[in-house]
Amino acid sequence: AQTVTQSQPEMSVQEAETVTLSCTYDTSENNYYLFWYKQPPSRQMILVIRQEAYKQQNATENRFSVNFQKAAKSFSLKISDSQLGDTAMYFCAFMRTPLQGGSEKLVFGKGMKLTVNP
Amino acid sequence: NAGVMQNPRHLVRRRGQEARLRCSPMKGHSHVYWYRQLPEEGLKFMVYLQKENIIDESGMPKERFSAEFPKEGPSILRIQQVVRGDSAAYFCASSSQRGPGNTIYFGEGSWLTVV
Image (cartoon, rainbow over all chains, first blue to last red):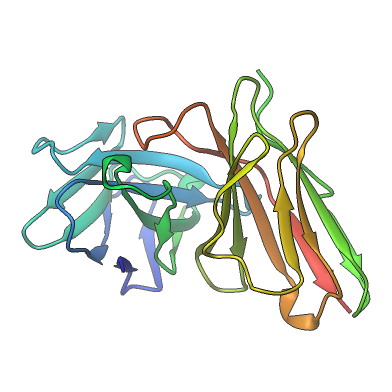
């Protein structure tokens, strides 16, 4: 079974600074997807960024980028130029690919609370 | 294009009552997922449905919980004889096709409180 670990329960950063959120996972599969979701105080789950395991290039979405280390099973999220609106819970998630059978269920880490201070 | 709609947003039930949570997927989406989030925890998969079919219910408790996604109408997550431990946020998500290449969109969640 796949597991996702977010070892830092909480972090804070000053506005405009850069912060990195860590995530490790465990799987025996070779092809899969990794995600970062954001859950602001409104509690809605918002997709931040997605990485396909077979792609070596790290995904980027504006101020958000990942450092994907497949051999180390590490998937960290870097937020540049932090904004007050980035304050939220951040969840790392894993999904196996459908070619291997089964459903596309997401396995989530326990989350990390990020606070951006003015 | 309206997003994933869940209702009610907040539901209070006494122990032993039934809870029904509804989810209307995004327009054009035929795949629905239900997740549960306990306090201070990440989301845990419960069930994956397509129209009129349960594809994967490996995360559903064996008793009291059921889910359906009829040909017409919203998907329903039903919890019978609720207990305090059922208090949680229940999230519905939908996608247009099978496969993680297609983005899964989440609703805003339904908060169940059992008193």
